[in-house]
Length: 378
Image (cartoon, rainbow, N blue to C red):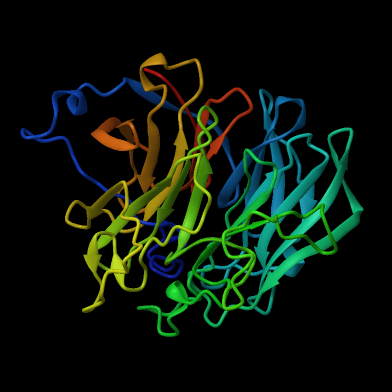
């Protein structure tokens, strides 16, 4: 993922967001692709480099700010910081506070960040009466990073109640250490752990590689380059991952709710459906449900959510996403796990770094420059 500001002095220094398929509606596209729902972006707040959001207690949306603060958003606007770890992280490279999540009962709050040494960490806090209890903080998992890019960093509680953690391939370019296909490292993977089942965590017994002595038990899926943003469909439980490409192809990966894990999304042998630098397609490669090249200003896919709100009935069931460089908000129409149309929703969020889903299912667009937009009916 690429994180840039409008300032020419900063442009190009941070690569945070995954690039996504920018397939524009054209004469040869299905008619449905040209009948996009009509939406508008309503600016509801201005944050400091927002990177992630999570529905929290009391109907509030919690917003993570990359320098290390967390604020809550309600009808009155953004609160003062409810958590501040700015002394523990840095915004050098692709580092910072990168992800937040609540468990289903809002009893525990999780943060994903890189510390001053560049190590990826996920910490847990107890929550009481809607407030973080700082004295309960503990570290759940750590992963050293060989380079300051491709940290991943997104975290979500899945429909099964387990904590999912996205980690990039370790950085540099071209996966020089072969981490994407190496099952003996957590880099280039989507992890699945039980943070409350052990100290510091337990492995769900049905994880796909539990009985493989050559693989890490925490791994749920692999072959990922920089899975900057992923989500679960609140209606079906399907998993969607926006995985940032190297130079040519951005991709959206999908796994059905019935998946038992173990998907291989191909990196670094494949970039989307294309062999990477002469790579050989793995026999178990799961191709992306959608990919796009960089000919239309896209450079880094920003994965979003399947819309399950009520404000825009025409958008229900569509996967909403964007691209950090292009900024156009788009959606994928799907049927039986296949994309049937790609819609340009006709709005642009600027340098879109992330999406957030409120407790009522409505979606928010986060721009690295600070804007927090809600997707409203036009």
